[in-house]
Amino acid sequence: MPLAELQIDRIDTREEDARLAALESTKILDSEPESSYDTITRLAAEYFKADTVQLGFADESRVWIKSYWGESVRELPRKGSVFELVLAENCPVVVPDVSKHPYFTNGRLMIRRLEVASFASAPIRSGDGKILGVLTVFGCQPRRKMAAEELHMLESLADLVMSQLELRKMRKTFGKCRQQNARAPKAATAIWPCKSDLRHALDKREFVLFYQPEVELATRKIVGLEALIRWQHPERGLIPPMDFIPLAEESGLILPIGDWGLSEACNQIQRWQREDPDQDAPRVCVNLSARQFARKGLADHVEALLRLSGVSSHQLGLEMTESSLISDHDTAVAVLGSLRRLGVSLLMDDFGTGYSSLQQLHLLPFNVLKIDRSFVARMTGGNEQPMQIVRTIVELARVLEMDVVAEGIETQEQYALLRQLGCKFGQGFLFSRPVPADVISEMLRLPGRILPDPAESDIGGMEYMIKTPLQIQVEMGLGLDRS
Ligand code: C2E
Ligand code: MG
Ligand code: MG
Image (tube, rainbow, N blue to C red):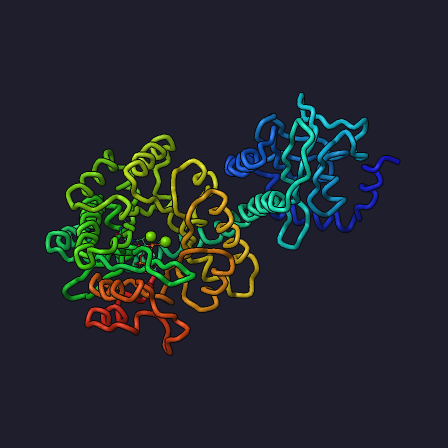
C-alpha cells in the first residue's frame, strides 16, 4: 500500500470531526480569498526564495487556497496533498527532494504547470492544536535541509495566519462594544460641548498638550513621548480628548486644533532641546485624525512646521489608526511615503483593532506598531489568546523590521510578560501617566533618562515620584483614563 494511504488510514474519524468543527468556527471557508493573507505568503516567498507559496485550509475533501504567491491555485483535491502529509505527521514537514519521497506516486508533485522538486510545510493550528490548514513553500529545485531558524520562521508565519483569524474574531466583539460605548456618551454630552465652545477654546488658547513617556522596556529609559491633548476649561477643569475630539472631527475644527497641536509639539521639542543642548530631545509623537490625514499637502505642511521650529524630522513621529487612513490606498501610500521621506516616524496606533491590519501593514510604510492596550490588558487574565496575539504582533513586527510599542502597561506582570515576549518598547500608567511638559522636563533630568523601577516604589509608577501642583491635578483629573 502506498505511504499516502497508510497515513490517511491513521487519521482517526473522531479527531477529524473535532478538526472540522474547529475549522467551521473560524468561518474561513465561508469568506473570499483574503488579500490580508497575501502579506504572509509574500513574506514566506521572499524569505525562502520560493517559486510558489500556498496557504490552504482543508475540509473533508478539498484544500481551499486562501492565498497564494506564484502559481495561481484556488483549490486542490485533499487526497495525496501536502496537507494530508502534514496532518499524518502532526508536525511541519520538509521534503528536500520530492522524487525520493515515497508519499508521492511516481515521485512527482505538480502544482498546475509547475513541477515541484522540494517543499516545506507548516501546520496552521487552532487554539487547541487542531491542524486546520498548511502554509507551504515550494521550490522547483531540490533544496538542502532546512536550518532550525528557517523552520521556526515558517512556523511563526503559520502562527500569524491563525492569529489573524483570531484577531478578526476579537475585532468583531470589540467593534460591537466600541460602537455601543460610542453611542452612550453622545446622548449624555449632546448639550456640551458644541462647535462654538471648541472654537472659543481655540481662540482662548485653552488646549494643552500632556506627554506620556515611551520607554525601552529593558532599561526604562525614556526614548520618546506621546503628545496627548487636553482641554483646560476654566470652570470644568481638564477635559479628556475623547470628550471633544469626536466633535472636533465631525465639525472640521480638528484641522485648526490639529495644526495647533503639531506646532505646539514642535515648539516643545525645541524647548526641551534648549534645556539640555547636549542630548537630543526625545522623539515626540503626535496623534493625527482622519481629516488631518486626508487634507491635501500634509507632508508640505509638516515640512514647513519643522523648518519653522528648527526641529529635526527624526524628533517627530505621527500616530495614525488604521481607520483614520483614507480608503484610497494609492493616495495613502503616497502621503505616507512623502512623510517618511521627510524623515518623520510613522506609528500605527491601536494595532489589532482595525479592519485589515496585515494588509495595511504590508502596503503602508509605517515604521512602528503600537499594540492596542486592550490586548495588553487581557494578557494576564489567564486566557492564552490575547497573549498569543501579542506574541504574534511582536513576531510580525520583527519580520517586517518594525519597532513595536505596547500601550497601556499597568502592572508588573504585564511588564514582565512583554519583556519575555521580546517587546522592546512600551508606555503605560506603570511608568507614568500623561503629564504636563514641565513634569517631563524633570523626568528628562533623571540620570540616563531612566525612570525608577516601579517594583521599588511602594505605590508604583513615576506619577508619585514628582509632584508638582499640575501633577496633583493630573492625578485627580485627567490622568485617570476615562475611555
Ligand atoms: P491613543 O493615541 O491610543 O492614546 C493612548 C491613550 O491611552 C491615552 O488616552 C492615554 O492616556 C491612555 N493610556 C496610556 N497608558 C495607559 C494605561 O496604562 N492604562 C490605561 N487605561 N490607559 C492608558 P487619552 O489621553 O485619553 O487619549 C485618548 C485618545 O484620544 C488617544 O488614544 C488618541 O486617539 C486621541 N487623542 C489624544 N490626543 C490627540 C490629538 O492631539 N489629536 C488627535 N487627533 N487625537 C488625539
Ligand atoms: Mg496614540
Ligand atoms: Mg493607542
